[in-house]
Image 1 (cartoon, rainbow, N blue to C red):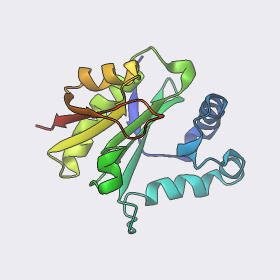
Image 2: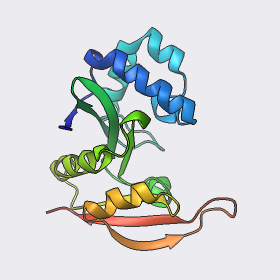
Image 3: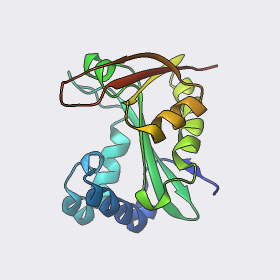
Length: 172
């Protein structure tokens, strides 16, 4: 499957919404903003907000570049890159987060998204990126390690949650 990373665009509205419904069915609507009905009603505003995130800065939000993975004219996943870290991102989240549409998992989508996103991170001026994942997330562990992630530590965040793994990838 040939994957291309692109900036959010209205062109992929239908397949994006289909992917969001799959995520929602799994209980993962958080990155669409959680309100799929609003996204459906004004998709152009949703896309504009995602594009604007690359320059928005508040006390708690740092700039973030969103990229969508498309294959065969279908939205198959998303990846986002924080331009810097704040305390919250150092604890949980890191520089890069990604999700593959459930019906496209197991095909190397996340591995390829991360591979293609690393030069984007470098172009943003980053020399190394932090990625975090739960100790129980074997798929994400494989994605990160296949892209050169070096495990620096594993630590608990809360007693009722899995351990959190902290990986760094040095950018050439």
